Each structure stands twice: as structure tokens, then as C-alpha cells.
View 1: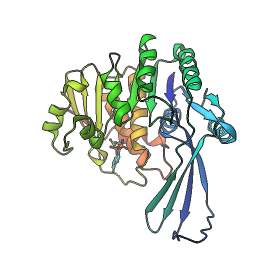
View 2: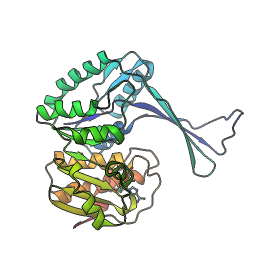
View 3: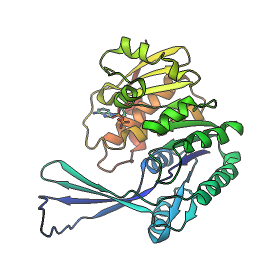
View 4: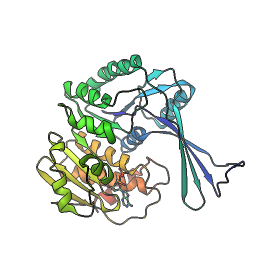
Length: 312
Ligand code: ADP
């Protein structure tokens, strides 16, 4: 089973509006509410691709109950830790020919007691897990080193962690003695980490960048490049994943779908080529759906066959 961690899940609300008017009333007809947060996108894609998953994280209040009910309806197994404070909502207003205005709640603040309780909860889930994915930013109140602690707990039980985060939490995780098995920075996150501008179009400097000491001990570094596919390092091997040109409907969540594909391939002990092809395919399939974090498994083989992996 793949254990997916979403510490700050949210109810994602989408309001389509022809025109957004400020300082007056906007009435919305087609409201859409989904269980969101990057880790839940990962969970949904893994579930849609017919792999066993268990979703965990913090959940709170009536909104938390609604979110769990939503996951039940989708058939996604979950075991969250309940907290007092309400789970957050994230509002996306889609308006005026392709504009998107977002209003994002910070979500609950986690106190020390709940932070410790969750580590116990995580320890109890780990024996059932073959692999862990951790995605997104952390809720308020947790120390920047919290993911690092979780990685140490997982590694001590022999469970590998795929980490998709950025900023200080990622830096801490790379500094720690027990490392994540895989990280998936995009070019901006990579520039942030290396403290210089990374040119995602220049693959030979990208290859040098991935040999920086900061990545020592991390088995996989996968840099996703949007329409240009991805550039990846596994141990001493480097690959450029080349993808076909496709019609993109909504690219939001494609990084999460990519992490889901990486987790499935690694879980299934596939070759490097198949792991990367799977990840590129789930990423592409997500961009072809209007709804974030959804893929159509019936299309998988068609696109999988069109991805090529070039040793670099
Ligand atoms: P992130 O959301 O983490 O920045 P990317 O935008 O690089 O991630 O997208 C992740 C993956 O999704 C890509 O590697 C690719 O497989 C697919 N993808 C994203 N955008 C496009 C696009 N415009 N055309 C085709 N595939 C895409």
C-alpha cells in the first residue's frame, strides 16, 4: 500500500463566473467542491490507477467530516488524525476568459500535543505501508523540521519517502542524515535550492546542477519541465523524459499526478524507464481533464507508448 500524507487538506471550491465584479454581489450557479490539497490529488490519481493507497494527515471539524465523506464516496481509504480546529477551504474563482483568482485559507494551527500525536499515528500506519508520499506545505504551528522528523520515522521502519515540497521544509529534509528517497522540484524550486537561476532549457547545465552536494544521498531527483517532460537523476544515471505534444485542458495538479506515477512505478519495482514513463503519463493525463487531480486510466497505455526516455 502507498501511504499518502496531506497535513493541510482543504475543501477546494471552484466558482466559475463569466465576469468577476468587485465591491458588489457575484452570483454563482455551478459550484464545485472537492477534497483537495496536493496529497489528496496524489491519492486520487493512485486510486484511479487501481493501486492500493491510504490517505492520512490532520482533519478537523464539520468541514473535515465533509471531506472524509467525500473521500468515502470516491472509494479512497483514509485514516486521518482528528483535531479540534476546522479543516480549511480554498476558493478558486474562474473568470473573465481564463483568469483565476484564488482565496486560500491558511488552515488550522497545530499545537505541540497534536503534532506529537500525529507522529504516533504515523508510526502505527507505517508497518502497512510499502512507500510514503508527502506533499505540499505544512499547516501553521509545526516546526520547519517536521517533514524531516517524519522521514526519519519512516526510514527507521525501512519505508521510503517521496517528498514534494519546497522552501525551508525541503532544505531541512536535504540537510538531515536520513534523506527522502525521491524529491520532485520544478525549475523554480531547484533555483531556490541551489541559490542560482536554473535554466530548464539547458539540459547539460541541469545535469551538472543535479550533481550538487545538496542532493547527495537522495536516490531520485526528478525535475518536471511541463510540456518539455522531465529531467531525472537516479543514482549515477541521468535521463531526459520526452513527451508528445498534447491538448492541455487544465495543468493544475499535474505535478501531483506525476508524483503519483513515480510512487506507483517505484512501488511496483519497475525499471527506471518505466517509472519515468508512468509518471509522465499520469502527469499528461491530468492536464487533459478539467478537474484537478483526475486521470482517465483508459487512456494510459496510448500515452505511455508515446513517451521516450533518453539516457543523458
Ligand atoms: P509542477 O506542477 O510540479 O510544476 P509540471 O508543470 O512540470 O509540474 O508538470 C508535471 C508533468 O505534467 C510534466 O512532466 C508533464 O508530464 C505533464 N505536463 C504538465 N504540463 C504539460 C503540458 N503543457 N503539456 C504536456 N504535459 C504537461
